[in-house]
Structures are given as structure tokens and as C-alpha cells.
Length: 325
Image (cartoon, rainbow, N blue to C red; front, side, top):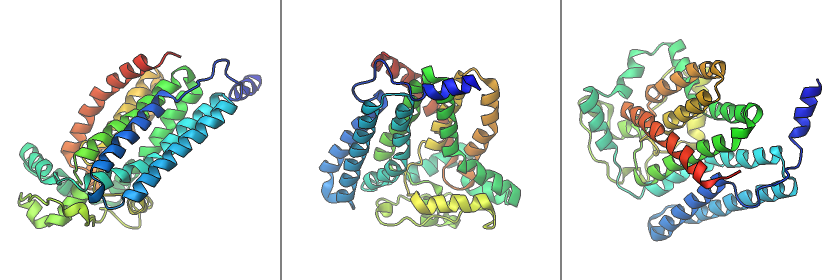
């Protein structure tokens, strides 16, 4: 009981040498904000919602400044956590922002779908759900897809409570990996099967016909219905999540796969094998589910794995060079 009380009090213990400026990951986010704002200014007349995009960026700056101010008033572990959680919460705003930027560029789904056909001889995203339509399997796949943000929260909090000395590094790697993916999505507009397939027609896709849609997704964003039984709990969770924030963007490489792979590498680095293997089934289901529910081409998944394996050591190195705490 005494050790718990001691740990709880440590959350509020004022740091002897509090960080004066922004955290390394906040500098990364501000850099991304500046980069995308410059892109917006260069393409302002082509954008559909430039004023709301700019206003959103001001809100990000204001929230970051407010969390910095709270930390400076009470510099402790808990306010550090609040600063990180605030940036993670803002990811739900940054994701659809990639669509606002990349929809003014020529769509590239026809290129990815053609590569998919060349590699596999078919479209796995089209066939997977058709070959496994059973209710329980569908619910497992949809559950796997909903595990994405819980996995992020679990790994982040594990580091905070159990590996605090590495918490800032781990949170940097997680958040920075998102924004590296977002840079790719901003300039590589791939909508994914759930948007490309219905735009072309499933009969055409099944015959291996992949036309160039040019700027089709500038205004159109009707997705395929999520496969599975609508009575399923996890099915409805995926449908609701898509209705709330999904856009024809961010398909290649899969950030679901890329970021979750980085999470698994961080889980392995904790040296707590029980923790790692506890997460593994959810990770496997998540990777499979991205293809099953039409969110990604199979080639997106492969690219997500490769991207994560390259990005993980690079972000470790960047953090080491940037931070001396």
C-alpha cells in the first residue's frame, strides 16, 4: 500500500529541471504544421476548405501552447502525460486534413490496384470478405480494426506507468511515425479499395480493369458497405467510425499497419514478453482486417510493414540526436 501511495505522489512531484521549450515531438508536429501550411498557401485557390483548415491549425497551436503553459505551472509527470495525450487526441483532426490536401492532386489508385493485380493475380481485398463471410469471422476482423487506437493507448500508458524513463522516447516515436505517414499521404493520394472499387464498378475490378479516375475524389467519396453482419457489435463500431471521420485518403502505405508494427516493436523493447504476446493476437487481427473491410490493398499492408521497419530505427536515432534529458 505504501509503494502505491509513493508512486501516486511521484506523479505530482515537481521536476527539478523542467523542460522549458517544446518537447521534441511537439517540434515535429509544428514542423508538419508549417510544411502543410506552406503547401496550402501555394495551392490556396484549389482547396475546398482553406479557411477551416487554417483555423484548425490555429487551434492546434493554441492547444499546444495551453498544455505547455499548464506544464510550466506544474512541471510533473502527470502534466507531461497531458501534453502527449493532447497531441494524440488531435490525430483525429489531422487525419481528414490529409484528404483536404491530397484531393487536389491526381489520384493514384489505378497504379496501386494494377500493382496488386500483378503481384497477386487478383484483388485480395475484393475476395477476402467474399471467401470468409461468416458472422464470427467478420466480427473478429472488425474487432481487430477497432483495436488500433486502444493499442496506441495501451503501449503509451505501459511506458508511462512501467517504463517511465523511456516514456518520452516512446511517445516521440509513436507520434512522429504518424506525421511521417501523413507527409506521404499528403503527396501520394491513394483512396483505397473501399472508395476506388465502387467508383470503377466491382465487375470492372473483377476483370482486372483499373481506370485512372484523375480528380474523381475531389468531390465524390461514396464507400463500399463494410462487409459482415450489420447486427454485429464490432461491425457497427467500424461503420460509426467510418461515418465520423473516414475519407478517401491515406491508403498507401497503411498507417494502421505501419504504426501498429511500431507499437509492437516498442512492446518488444519493454522486455516484458507477456505484454508483447498479449498484444500480438490483436495486432495480427488488425493487419488482416485492413484488407478484409476494404480499407487497404494487400500491397498497402506490405508497404506498411516495410515502412515501419525502416522508420522505427530512424526515429530512435532522430530522438537521440535531438534530445538530451
